[in-house]
Amino acid sequence: MHNKILYTLLAVSLLALILAAPALAQEEAPELEIDLNRDFGYGGFGNQIQGNFSIRVSGPDDLAEVQFYLDEILLGTDQEAPFRLQFVTDDYAPGIHQIYAVGTLAEGTQLRSREITADFLSAESAGEKTMELLVPILGFTVLAMVIAALVPMLTGKKGGKVTLGNYGLAGGAVCPRCTFPFKRHYLSPNMLVGKLVRCPHCGKWAILPAASSNALSAAEERYLASQVESSEVELRPETSLKSALDDSRFED
Image 1 (tube, one colour):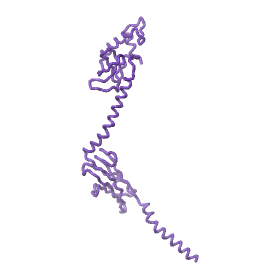
Image 2: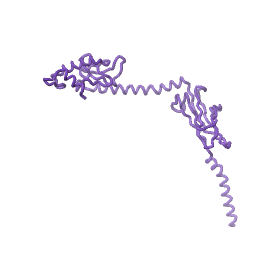
Image 3: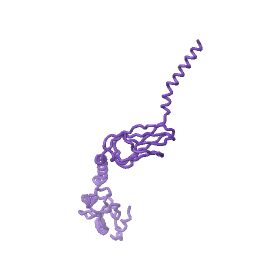
Image 4: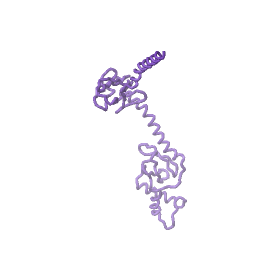
């Protein structure tokens, strides 16, 4: 009786090993990895692509050869690592295509990769898709620049401390109303013939180009002369108008 039980257990164990062997072999079977990389072109949302792309394959150390397929068409063969093949989507009909690879090991075993589904777009469709992505981004960027330039000008007060001789990257301008100089903000909207700016002295809006150094010097003298008796520019009795102008150029 004891021997029968022992034989039964051995038979059950052997049967379990036989049934589990295919599963273990499947888990330990080498795999062929495949990736699709964009070299140049459009790669939008989902699987839509257009342009130059590369298929890259990796596998076991003894991988000897890789064949690259588009649908059932053999695109090419590579026998050296890294296994790679470049193709151009425009060479094939627009629409859905399946991309995969078949690798051969040194001892002859063949491995097949997973399939990559790609929707090939025409150059015209890819251009339209690109514009659909770029227009909102460019619009938001321009709007942000305009807001950044206008908010300080709209909320700023007229007057205030004026630093003469220091006009920044965008240069200085001379107000056509009050004829005083001021700094053009580099984020102010560019209107081709000049920047849309607001004079901090009188509040007038105007489209003004960068003024010449001679025009700014004359405007600085007018401004200093108008401020001799105000609190913004205090001149000592022995200080000349020209000296005050020269000193103002070194203020922060």
